[in-house]
Image (cartoon, rainbow, N blue to C red; front, side, top):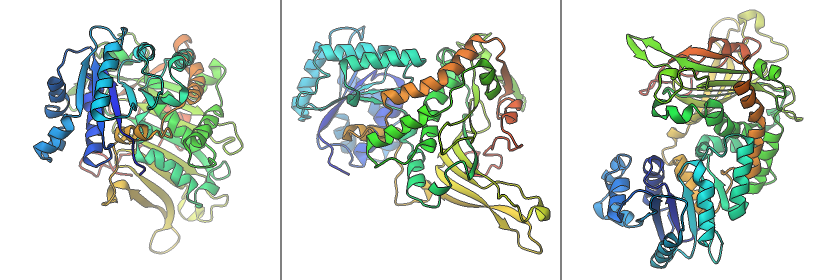
Length: 510
């Protein structure tokens, strides 16, 4: 790993949940493993009235998300870490002069010798991104005068194509595109990154990665929880905006993309943009209704216990049609993927928590053993993104005994089996990349807009066409019953976790 320059991380929204739950534990892990620069400081910025000590207590010493980690370390080790954290009270409004903030940053820059290298992390509602960028610019904090300036923004990046374009224009008014890092924590997961390595470093996969050998591609994202306390936010978003447009289309782009010229960040991002632009946009309501399905989990009795339906959740409109389940069938209009259907679904209140991509290969053109065992199961390459990250190949083998009875066998790899390897948390990896100036796993402006361009017609149809149904499904099931009808040839969706084997209640890669 190349040496990381001294720098300062300035976190806006530092008193919020994301900072305490994800960012600071990730920074601590980087510190513990020796990945931080020689000189490094964190400045928390928000509207809460906190002293340095109160900020350190809340985010480190008394944080429920760090207790297990710091319990294993000496107090002096934790104290040295905590002393890198400082706080600035912005007052009652983010839209104000940042001159005092600039002075505080200058003082810490001198104290820690961070050489004018600043990363601004906007852990705030997206509505504040433009406001913060404007005020940073007016305080001369966006200009790279002797040191770098980087701006990290969280999703959702826009509400639709129009708002995404507007937000890009706003940020580009104050920061150059090379300074803007749009974070998607899914791209920080090892198995998402491993999609590139699996494809482009193995000659046994890439020659088969096309319409001649692949029957269809299936991606599932499932969560066991409902919307919980996010009902107010979620009812204005829905599964299509919350998961499909960002996380799942990122996975699609890595599966669809052509080989990049090199592992350079811009070369990889260029190919991802081309992949997203090649998705066939559904232009008519009839086409959208035929190839998409939305659903909502409903009140369900399970073993005498009542589980709330979506419309009963706090902050949700009792007549809401917002989807907690979305399934989309689409095609890719390029040479490699012509005619291969892609099926992507995401849902809440489902049987298990899992995200995986499944490549279904075609069956042999002449099935020699058909008459012996009616064996029609396809070969599969399964890439498990979470949890229990790994890769599984399913293929046919002869069952011992007389005749040629065929069954499926598994070849599998789990990251947990690598005793000497440490799998970084997604935020840990992405923060480290930003510190090094590596944009490979961050979305570019044209990439975000290409994703919205595909999703926008579906959103508009769902919101404006009364012919679009919202199907109910029971809590703890795999979505509306008619979702299997989307997949031709009676394949149906692959429902991982039907055979429970591990302590957390789902199989590893079954």
